[in-house]
Length: 229
Picture 1 (cartoon, rainbow, N blue to C red):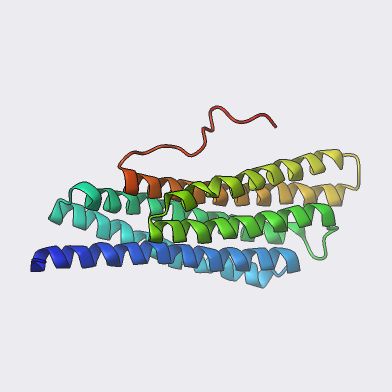
Picture 2 (picture 1 turned 120 degrees about the horizontal axis):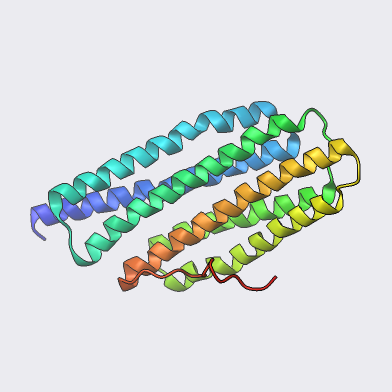
């Protein structure tokens, strides 16, 4: 392999490692945000917010690296698809980090020892587990260039979407109950929405796997034609 070609391949590999490593940062940050939610730990929530600088820094590193590579190396074929896909991957990583921060920012709003509805909290916790699993699977699918594994993200995401609707419906049903409990439940609706967006971004990363492998971009699910509830 010519020296310039080897250097190019090494740089693409470094950028891919950095971008997918961003998913590890998201998984850790999301885990802390969910822990803070369950324990009403405001200090931990503040750490999640402060730690977002690491994910933003990773975004800037990969984004600038990809732009430099495109400007200096003019990659073609599969290499171009990979480099272009990494721009999308790191964008979705940064957005997932923002959603974890959004969850953390909501925690102080619920107050000390809020009137927790265990049914709603259980649904939100399950959404957190699934969204975290999606992030892990999106990383694995990209590493392995496994289109089937990427497409399987839709299966998990459908459950996340279902639970998101359930959290909203449970909150509506509790509309005539205690105002403090209703306020807490409305906050959980916003948490559920943030987790739903994490799942959507994981699916978007999966779509980039299919693009890299096949050269064709396609959406795994058509949001403009949703399935009946």
